[in-house]
Image (cartoon, rainbow, N blue to C red; front, side):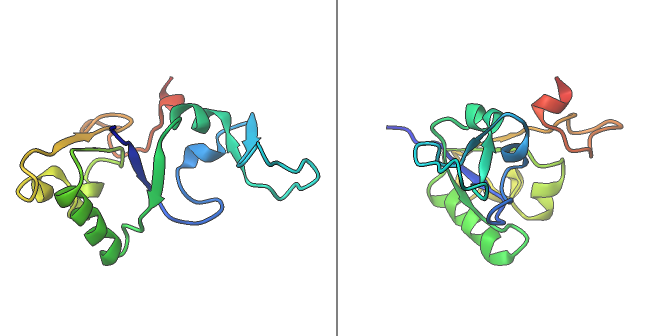
Length: 133
């Protein structure tokens, strides 16, 4: 069947998608095996868990050429659809916008989502749906 993978920012504990830390409320990272006496357990926001249900993810450090090359290889050889939500212009700076990828994968569907649209006075600001709602 179809699979949905999400490429996330690297960073270990405390890294990844910022929405992991939107809360309270929080749930332990592995709440099936959670030890209530261990306050060091990483916790995930219920918001993050609700919008990422059934997604698998991996981390790429796109600030390094190796990470960008892996992303290009995935776009060329594996991806049918890319959805990105960086601030406008970020993917172009990294050589990962539609114009950079379309020739290697002519059937690629590419969707850019930003908090405040591609132009206008707030276009360069970061935004999540919970900020805008």
